[in-house]
Image 1: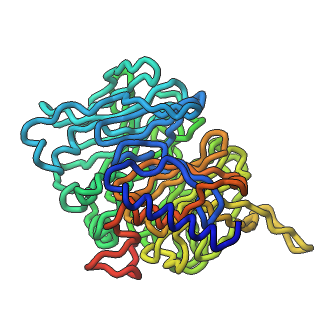
Image 2: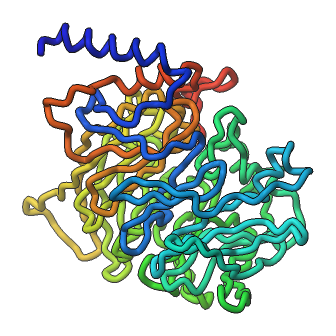
Length: 477
């Protein structure tokens, strides 16, 4: 088909969509004109969201994925793409119905899908005691089991591989840290975005204040059978991002939160409190490392590594058994807020970033697929302690220029690595999307501009990290 006819077809299609956008749901599928990859909208609920990028969302048999929506926790059967409301949010107390800050306390907060059973673990605040209670819901039967009540001011962020322990933190003394430091800063009410994926407006300043406050905290585990709490670590550092190994029930990864250039971020500790070890030690001024995640095999910890901050970009990996390190280089416009990996580490994916992120990319608003390649040793000196270098070759999957990057897309592969899943507000409220890793056939007729579709169904968006009070070039961290 000649280019002019293709262009006319696309313009006509978008105009037709514009006429019905206010009365119809956003499209279910289309092929991105700029990349040639097919995109699917997987969820129907405005405000729906997949998990944070490093949290397991798949059942052990890879049949189901969990996602959240304003009405509760849902399952998505990956083969049929049928969805089901699994754990509805309870009715709100009268004082919470009109207060967005209170509403979040009484909804179900998904933690992680179990690695052993078809269970989604979640927490909810008990209105009578004000304490967080841990539950699990069976993804097949829907049966909900009450597991443990947490200490005052405590929350958990992860469940271990054999589903016997949860891990989290609590402040040692009563404080108003949630309000003061914006730990659960909410999105604008009209967007309905889930809290954990949304960047606060003042994220950089909040992180500075919280790090400097030196609030005493406790890193702990809770036995899900008995409710017994075991304290692993007392600290005045800001502790967060707890994530158990997917294969080792006794190994917990966590981080020292704060501006990355001011902290030694990535740590592991055993569930008995021993072997508290730093995973990456900086060797350069303003070097940063973070947004760590487990490889699917549980053998490697991967992380974003910049030498120095905002200048040179790597995706690095540390093998816990061999202590070998790898580092894949990428270009500025290829950097992503989050990365993820398939089984076998033959492919990586990234969710891009707008000019307001740390890389200040001029053209970085893409969902990316990365093909890794090792750097050949052409007669160079080699030592066992050397980092193995490589490069990531980027392939663009989705044009995200109409996505507001205050909502982090949080990419992940489907279990068979045929799809990359992400959350986007390109249509205004958020939905869960998937893009096919293989390109669509040339015969596809529904080839459309993804940003144009966004402008049609979300005509009044914030397409990047820009606001009236913060220009696009103001970094968030």
